[in-house]
Each structure stands twice: as structure tokens, then as C-alpha cells.
Length: 142
Length: 142
DNA sequence: TATTGTTATACTCTATAACTATA
DNA sequence: TATAGTTATAGAGTATAACAATA
Image 1 (cartoon, each protein chain N blue to C red):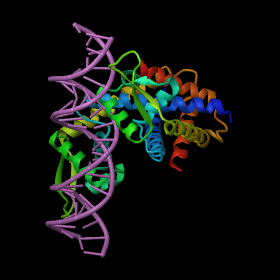
Image 2: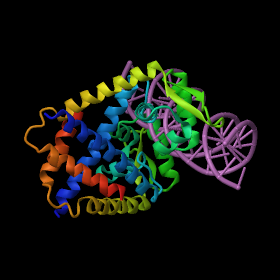
Image 3: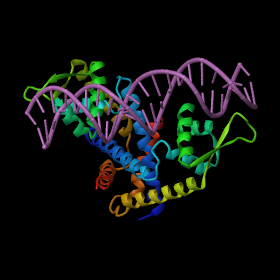
Image 4: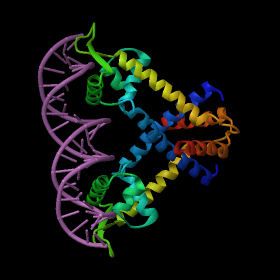
């Protein structure tokens, strides 16, 4: 392995990560969301109404944190809380119509970002590039 | 461009970004630092003692924010504030010996992470991969 | 007038611990 | 006993606005 080239690759990756986060965050702001609250909507959209416990586990945040995130999503009209049919301790969090529309918008935003980033990708093999990303994901997970 | 492959690449990239942030953040915690405070040390280490104004501009955060970050770095012994020789409004922030040692440690950590991620890189062409990262950085900056 | 940095204030995100209601 | 969620509390990070000292 080439030490210098590897260090350079990591620098770029970190730089890219920062820029990507900023870009995503600004995009979400336009919908009244944030990098913390948007994933709650994604989770519900992907897997249906869920308890706060399930959301907390899926997003790897504390119960207290989910309470706050759902609080703000409720007061902004993205989701509703309703009693769980079988477990009276639990609350089911579901998307409102506005929440669903917003998720659809987020999907469009994502598509647009994909095009902006990978359109005119040209010479470099995208499959190899993705494979490289994949390998790094694997190493960071280990 | 292949729409589906591109979407997949972006997903991996976002996933990688999250994991990388988590990894870096945990590494910094071990030194009593964070993703917000460590860059202040890096900046001073790279470019010498600087005013808070310069740090705020370089790191793209508000003056208020830099005051807080430097406050905590001072109280943890990483940096000192001293009066600017020519401008009595400004304060020069410089590394303490402990701050310098810490930056050296961070550099070692970074080297180790580089090895962990790019050692055994094998088949994929690292230069092409880095070029891909570079291109994305360029597009996000535009 | 413009700039540097602080104080005042406020919001988001995060966590742990104690507690209530339920299982 | 254990679990779901809230209240209480705390700390980091971020921002804007008003202000003091200096340029």
C-alpha cells in the first residue's frame, strides 16, 4: 500500500463527508427538517407506523431523544402519536398526509442530488467506485 | 448514467459518511476533544497562532461559537489566549505544549485509521477511487 | 464607521436518572 | 420484574443581536 496516496484518499473522504453533510442538512432545512428528524420520517415511511422504542433502536438514539424529536415532528405536523392497540404503554408514531408528501419530496431531492453528483460521471468505473465505498463501510463497521 | 447504480453509490456514500463521523468522533473523545473542537487545534497547528476571527472564518462558524470553543479548549489546557501585538481588540490563540502533543497524537490516530481503511486495498485502483472522491468534492463545492 | 470579541439569549441534539403507567 | 415513555436535568454546539473596546 502507498502510504501517501492512502492518506490523501482519507483526506478527500473526510472533506467529502463534511460537504455532503452540509448539503444534506441545508436541503432538509428547506422542508423544516434536520439531519436528526428526517431519518425518523424515513424510518416510518419505510417500515410503517412504529413505537418510539422501535424508532429509538433503529436510529440508535436514546428514548429521551426520540421523545424530543417526535415532539417537534408532531408540532410541525409531520407525524401523529396514537395509542398502540395491544400495548397501552406504547405510542405508535405515524406519518400525516403532510409527512407523506414531505417524504416524497425528500425522495425527489435525493434523486436530484444523485444526478448532480453522478451525472457526467464519465471515465471512472462507477461499479469499482461503489465497491470501494462498500469496502470502507465494511471496515468501519468491523 | 445508470440511475439505479448512481442511487446506490450515493446511499453507500451517505452510510460511509455517518460511520466515518462516528469513528472520528469516538477517536477524538479519547483525547477530550470533539469534531467541533479538534479542527481548531488543527488550524492553529497548520497555520500558527491566529485570532479568533481568523479561526471563525476558516472553520465557517460564528464568532460566538469560536468564543465558546476556545473557552473550553483553554480550560482543558489545549490552547492559550494572548493579546495581539498590533491589534488590541484581537486575541491570539496558540497551542500549549499539551495542545501540541495532542495534535501529534491525532496525527498518529489518523495514520492508523488510514492503514485500517486502505491497507489490504487490493484490486481496486486507489488513484481512480481518489479521483472519484475528488470529483464529488468538486461538485458539492460548486 | 468598521471590526474584535463578549454577554445575553435561544434553539437543536444528545444523554442519564428518576418516575408513572402498564406488561 | 421489565418495558414504554415522560419529566427533570445537564451539557455541547450552533446562531443572532446588542454592546464595549479598539481600529
